Image (cartoon, rainbow, N blue to C red):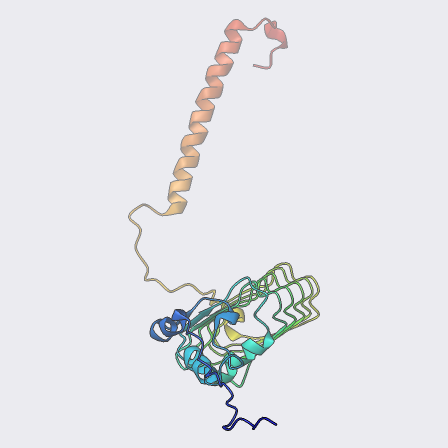
Length: 257
């Protein structure tokens, strides 16, 4: 019987290597602008440390522009709100086909956010916003939107154009002066706590000091014009009658002049 071979059977262990980083991640950290798809962000499921890397990229953002995509869903919107990037001023999710709800709350999340565009989001049905910093909000052409609750004291401009299923709108703003709800044919509840929208305009003109006119009193001018007009009319009538007397084909006996 042949002797057993000595030594341990070695198992080849392959060391896993971290996948290459996308160059746009570092550029975003430097510029503060993310304009690529959600799927291009670092994913913690791909590499263990990429969760922290993803957070680093998103919290560095000043502007997030992800338009006309099906990859953006509620989970990503919630992630942004939860991370609350301290310098984020703009969120543009225009045309996000699978965004169904957008909730920005509590009121101190995303403390510098000024502009939010959720227009043309085909599945968006519910919006709840609480923000001290938001100034401009666009929700145009959201065909499934039914309810919008907006508590933004600094909101200046708001648009809901062509949202045919919108039923409930509640807005609290101290300075909102412009709102567009054209094409919202299903509205049943509208509560606008916006004093600037209904601010009355003082109809009393500013008082001006009396200025003495340089012309004669108006009554005197009218009387003078009346006398002149009467004299001119009388002279014209006399000339007309004189002409008729000389050229008339009617016998003098039948003429009243």
